[in-house]
Length: 428
Ligand code: PLP
Image 1 (cartoon, protein in one colour):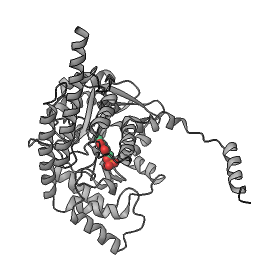
Image 2: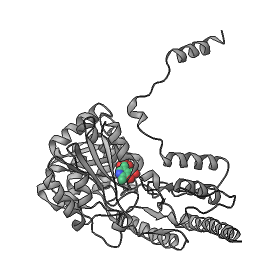
Image 3: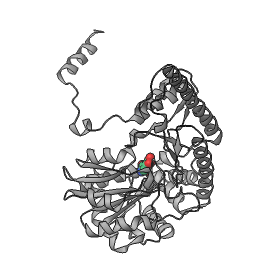
């Protein structure tokens, strides 16, 4: 009798081998996942790993936001809400766009989802047919390309160079457009580079879009409030009213209000697109969490003073980490203008040898070396389409950053010492 259930299971497994859909096979396991798995394994073994891999603020969600969530639960806001956002949250978002960006949207031009990520997913599922193209300037956040692929589209990666500030140029955009192009994605401030686009940077790109009415711009503004050196933020829909019918402006509360786990993102754009996105959502999650929506209303409507405090902490950390990176031989790091990532050029370390004799040939090998030799987890640039770089998130305490940078510097110096000694040996 004891044997019977497992025997049944074995037979079922043989009859029903798992077969994954083609759309999933197109998604590669990212370097981020590989490094995180190795970091978790080393932590389990008792190593004190400092993670500079996280894409989320280390700050706690503000108390007024938590209180609003408790109040929502107490008054019974615990049921399904309207499909793509409560009227109260849509109104708060409408006010946010007017207050922060000077754009007046109607509430029927606004949609809410479980994070900006679901907004992107809804947008791509609602607009792409098999083979339609989406232009993605790289280095870029990994999910853009994968979401496009899941939706049946083709990501067209356009490499942006460090000496142009990792910004897409009008010429690059113009030459990437084909008859299949549906979208171009611009993320400012950007993950992983911290690059921002000013109104002057956007203008030539918008001029290209004015000539290509079928190509829409997805402006991912999720890092809007994490912007340094007293830079002002500008979103493309505010620059040229003629383009409003071609732009989806994406934002959310995750990064600005330290609310990654609450899963609230939102977007504003033409009503036809917003309606189509709601159809996708209606058959996936039905609606965003009722409690999180109430919390997001408070985040957007309550005191905004915390934004400046968090921005100041991030700026201090940026100054520290970029300064520290630039003291390491073989590494250079451009000053990011926003977001909370340093994107360090490590090409000068390629070809050097680890103390145990392994040659560092790729950024992924360098990330593994820093994880195993310095106990610091970070993400190789190739995960973002930029080999030769490392992304270091500084969304962690200054004391963690100081310790991490001292470990990284000394691990890199160990590389140099060995390489120099070997070169010397070669000469003899
Ligand atoms: N866009 C960018 C550029 C991001 O880096 C992230 C998260 O890392 C998101 C969107 C997704 O944010 P959310 O937590 O709102 O889904």
